[in-house]
Length: 331
Image (cartoon, rainbow, N blue to C red; front, side):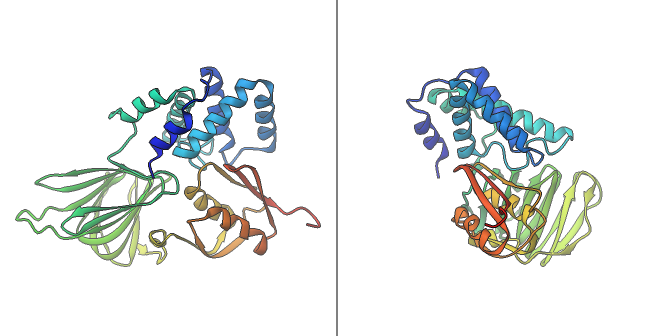
């Protein structure tokens, strides 16, 4: 999937967006993407959109850009007050507003800027990608992921910037026996021959090992050996105690989302990673439980199936703005 070309084509020929309106539209999108957004927020946004034609134009452009790029992932909004989250929100708001107001040429220049957020490898929302790294090693990127690759004579290094990856590291056949390192903000995952997956989530880095063994070197605290069938996480406080790995941790490689009596709110947050736009769960139904194996290739079909097993209704304000809430009485 080539989101840059699609977005350039999508923006071509559209009238420019007022910069102030673009900033406001990005702010509304960020606000409504928060788990704390209310119906009053939705009504206020609707009133803002209806007040001026340029507001609606800016809103549609901001939605279109975010739907293609996933700049505001589910829950980023106002969900957290910690400084890293605030910085992420500011960066997302600034980027989304700039792209919403930009024309195709400005968009192309932004994508080409090597000092911006673009990584060596990146997947868009709902996209997965497989990369051969040489000597039999492979890398799989899940939805919304970004990785830099730095292989040299001393090491084989992947820098995980965001998202989730699955790695098959094959022992280096060269005389130096270079280690295979995945570097996350919270520390390094060091292997020689192993199959494992790594995910960045809410300020932590989760690691599970399917085959072989590896070592976790946190930015702070002692190292931790992790064997096949085990999982642990790296955080600002160091490495956690190892636990048994989730056998479904790599189901996404088969395009499957598995749930075992999962809370509906958590399930929809996970499903939302694989579809563009905003997927909200009303707190009134967030505690309902759901089980099953769901195909990620068609998230709309997954949503359509929910009312058959749960007392919920799925409401589409737009194709990119969906809310799952209680079923109306008597429905």
